[in-house]
Length: 320
Image (cartoon, rainbow, N blue to C red; front, side, top):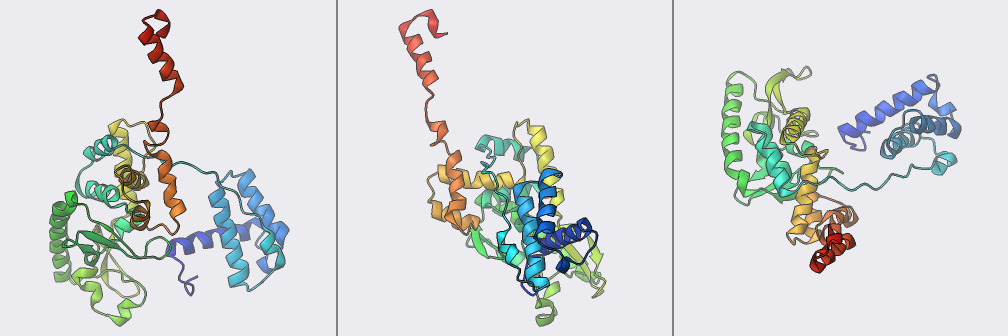
């Protein structure tokens, strides 16, 4: 998986499914098993564990990788396995007033991050993994490195957060200088940059924009490092804010991204531009937001409303 540069999250998920498949079949050698065993495992996920179609397809992808890439077995029955068909769901979108209400219930770093999720259309992990060098205040943009699909993209830096983010980075820089003075100040680098640029791990441009409050000791190198702020910190803060705001929607961190795209389209932005800002490979993925615009069902008057209006115009009591 690392030879093929799969993401750490994909690696973790695939290994988990391979282990479950191994346990499900009594720890037998997977090379001795066939289509019936894979089908039985997937059926159990669907019927007994009632997993979502996307989860079932992820398990299938892991097993396909196991047989084809790990074991090197090109078996005809692999192509006959049927993928679960996922249902099409409309995303949860907050109105501008609801976004304001949620953000007003937040404070500190998590509020700043939530504002950037909404104002820049970032995924949560993309926000957590931002490095100092990827925030350009002059051009008012953010470079997202290694986003979903291992792609880079550029998105906007909202003017409303620029001053607050600059002040935040001043505090982070002061913290970094203290770490350096204490023999730390290291940060994890992608790929083999630590070998190519041995000192880059302590340099300011490579530091996390949102570092963790505590450091840790990297066992292999003996370096005192800081990880980025864990995504669960932001998730929990957003959940508390949504409950406190009284909004009757199941809003999460990702809801801010959905709201970003929908509000851009409502304001007349070109869908191709929105696609680039979101980092979607196919414009069809971005098209889902056109279904929740006010120009859709929200812009059409119900025939029942016409009955009510006609009744009132007639002055009769039947229009109540």
